[in-house]
Length: 363
Ligand SMILES: NC(=O)c1ccc[n+]([C@@H]2O[C@H](COP(=O)([O-])OP(=O)(O)OC[C@H]3O[C@@H](n4cnc5c(N)ncnc54)[C@H](O)[C@@H]3O)[C@@H](O)[C@H]2O)c1
Image (cartoon, rainbow, N blue to C red):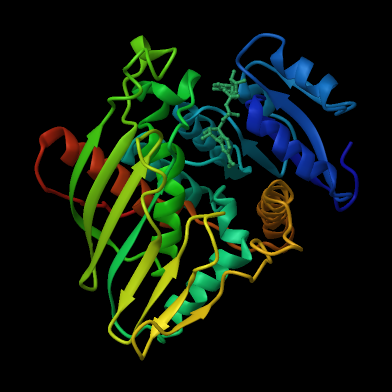
């Protein structure tokens, strides 16, 4: 029985991140979690019990879950299954919040976006940093015109010892390594701030010296993705994007994110590395600091863990409200196809050892 005004949700994939989705939904009195599906026998039922989802149904096949009267689903499977489960859900008339990265290949991302368009349903991609006030401020500064014409952006993420295992290190299941897992976030921050210009060409390099070494990874023999990548991406509008990502390296950081414009530059330091984010303009070395927006580097800082929970809640809540209000997708799949196209281009260029063109067919 449908409760009046409630939003009925199903969860597909009941591993680690599904727990964060459920935690967020459970704080919403207007949401009912009706069912959970997981391909591993018994896993959905265990998850329902562990997370106290009394009355929710358990399935092994997501298509059975999609036969229920649901408004939306959270897709929390490994990357490789985002495509099939999202397309099936959209075709069954459900709204979809899929975890990041959008898919494993560009072709899959395109099919997902097309399915959303055909069905007239929300397909939103779960980039929770979009809800971080710091990220909002970065976009606001970039879009304000204060930097003048932006011609160069440098961004990425540099973990020193941060290689996951399991499904994350297999190309057929994850699509890519560090690029797909954490690179998609950095790309989203840069591209979203610039209003997602079309990527045109890319020249990239990728390697996996750490993941394939038993000294650094206990699953070295099955590691077939990259643990480091660097790329120069040409974007429409005459912008060069210098992108760097690593899961493991002998260095503390790959440096700050920066936007260089003809009137000023914006620097964003890596999280936790110190108070020097700001806009540089005018006189030599003059800077206006923005680092303390959230108080993250001050005595009264919100602990990073709590901050992460808050932005995760905000992404899930925005999905629910978009469903209730009949709004378009908050982070549209159609837009994130460009993010997937850059990842696809980086992988092709790195494999071919030369610059490649990025072409994105009509959606
Ligand atoms: N937004 C974030 O902060 C964040 C953090 C971690 C992971 N993720 C993303 O979430 C996704 C899942 O990651 P995880 O760490 O929870 O993985 P996980 O391996 O812990 O869980 C995935 C679950 O999906 C199940 N599954 C696989 N194929 C399925 C299918 N076709 N139908 C139903 N269930 C299926 C698996 O059996 C497993 O239980 C990944 O895409 C990852 O990139 C996002």
